[in-house]
Image (cartoon, rainbow, N blue to C red; front, side):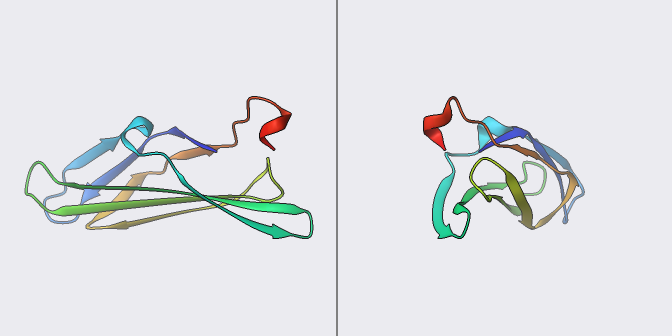
Length: 100
């Protein structure tokens, strides 16, 4: 799974808008849980930074779930110190059948 489009957040302290690009996030932490129809795959991305306007600490947590593998089943976005203005887009992205 990949973050296809970035996320825009607004600092709760000074209201500055920050545009976070997909490449700003580190590699996803990936967890697997075997279920009835195969594996459920959880991908987690985290990004922390300080607002360059006021210094407020901002945290973004993006979670995406595939179940069954290859199908985006659920996504969740959590933030601290800011609010989401534009949600990111997640996409299941496999190069070939071996990745499933």
